[in-house]
Length: 264
Image (cartoon, rainbow, N blue to C red):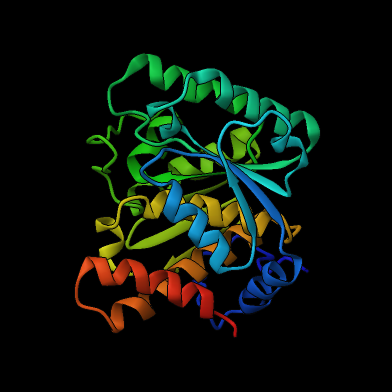
């Protein structure tokens, strides 16, 4: 699949943008195996998001999986119930095997110095994509923004310069989430508007977006295009779910329904 983004631009991407629906179709057709380490709060939703678009997910410490997976995602909140070694081992194994992988640096910059140092050490294993909220990514880039636990205190617009710099320094595609998401490889930068405010009220929604990016990476060769496909799909499903639900519980179920129906 050819990259959908050819020049540095702040073009807005939506479900009607070229190659987005084709990207979702490629995931369904390819049915890749996707492996992840995430926290126990987000694991169920992350797995169900991946199943909704046709991947085969596996979550949990398993030595051989990072090398054999189509793509890997590592959510550092997995440290809630795991030691650091499985996360660093998975990142190193993925990198050494040439497996594409996504880093979700949850709550980095929120004040836990030892934790922040560990998260930053994972950059040595060259993630393909880094995704997070504005405070997390500003902090990861070396800036002064701090989060309030897992919540951001900065807007996604505030983080554009920081994520572009982080992308250039690491060689990764960097994606910052907010009312409008911004995705960049350091040269090309695009915006993905939409979604629904209730995404911030469903535990693990952002974490599951990291999983969905991994699912797209497994079948779409251009990392920025893959990241865009995942973000647009997630925003579109959230908009459609929001249009037909009233509460957060029904919204969470409808989000999975709408992801399963995208492109069908």
